Image (tube, rainbow, N blue to C red; front, top):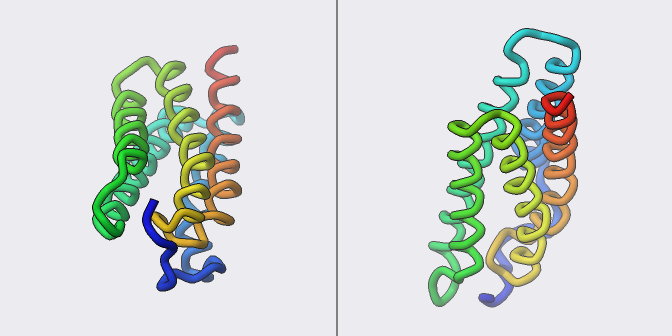
Length: 149
């Protein structure tokens, strides 16, 4: 991995907290609405979750452009996994799609803190991503349980 970035803060800034946790909380909120029987909430959860996961694939790819020495295979693999899990979640049956979303979001929780410590992602990702993705994964797991009932 590249040398650590000194130009990124160690602590997550307030705007980053809002932009980071907000979309994850929407997943959990929509999944809760699906459990409450709100029409189309399950489908909205899947679409929102896929859109955000595809966006996060783009974030990973964008960061790879700034990696000293060029993109790393891990960055490209993480980007591809997230992108294709998001796309597949939109076209496959809901129960399979949501399972793929869980995989994609879990990959972020696992990979991004390592990337942050290695200097290929902002340093604050080491603290932000596990908690942020835990919210998204919890909402998606709740939706998956509902779909499997």
